[in-house]
Length: 202
Image (cartoon, rainbow, N blue to C red):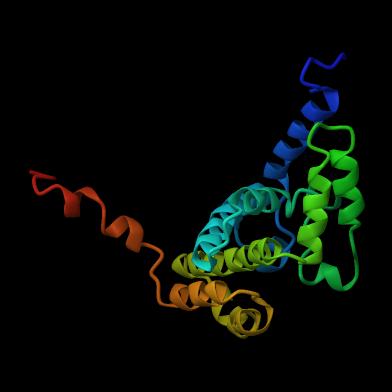
């Protein structure tokens, strides 16, 4: 297949299909939890939003870099899968090689450098995206709790340790603290028709 004038070719289309397959990748921890949770694609989408919120709170201006890192942070899992916190004790996937080969020959091959910067945590943007990656777990814990799961209580010490020792930015720690007192249902309980439209149900 010939490339068009802009240089887009078959490898670019293959990357798009491979990225789409993230929808089919279940998180490794689903085995241990026995509960429905975000797939890798859904997780990645919310990480982008968390990262943007943290970037604003931290006064970080390069939102494009933030979004690129968030888009890339789990992309190699299309080839190495998402290993759970138990599996990682025994197995390792070469995510660096996977990302390098995924992007090679595409018009976005330069994003490999952005991925490496994220993995090395050598910029504030990389630290923010990693904070967002961690915080999405805590958001899911609140959602599990809403569904009656006992898991959040069992994981409480682990997640407190992540908050205290693993989060890089103060904004991430602040978000974690606020999250603990939030009700998952508040956003829709306060804006539904019964609250907003006085004539609803009449």
